[in-house]
Image (tube, rainbow, N blue to C red):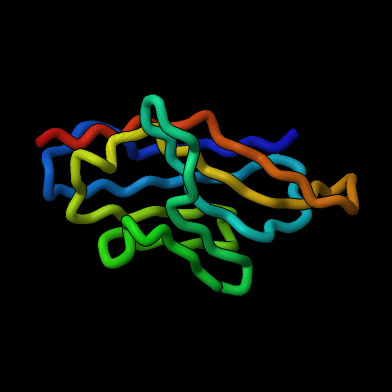
Length: 121
């Protein structure tokens, strides 16, 4: 089994900062991309940022310059540092990983359970 466990969400005032963490565990052979998506009430889930095993990063336009994604490959962990938070950043944030399990040559997509981020104005 593979699990993605997120932490770090919470309530913060506009302009504040939060840091999300997501650790992947289980029978993992390799992890390709890891990243974060978010889903606000009544909206579709959207990519926030992701990073490949080689270090290539991608960000949503709405978070560029404010959020920073990083990854510790030795710990199978991805982080999202969120600065200058705005009320429109309020959403459930989901960790995502494309990875291979030790028992399979196929790459699968895995999701965390989600962590709530609420930014008050």
